[in-house]
Image (cartoon, rainbow, N blue to C red; front, top):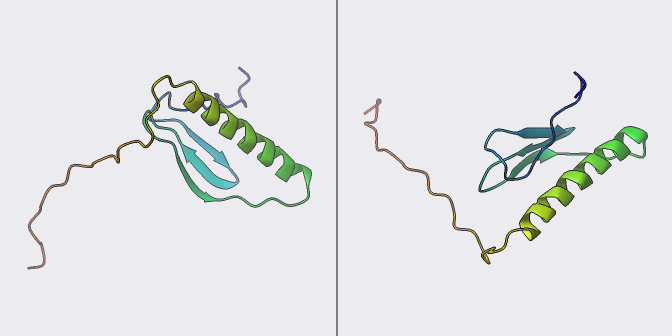
Length: 90
């Protein structure tokens, strides 16, 4: 792989990969993929490149989901353990 090339974004493969397209960030996860930010497209070649990259990434996400044999209707919400702490101001 050339020094300037980024590794491929493989949907649901890990909890570490991040892909950035303009102001849009895609955070990979084994259970979920999160998209944050905004991405503008103008009538120029740079925008065409970003649009193609986004389309390729979304196509990979769709393919990964379609490849799941036992896909539920809706995934359970992730629950984050919480811990009560003493109020430092009171």
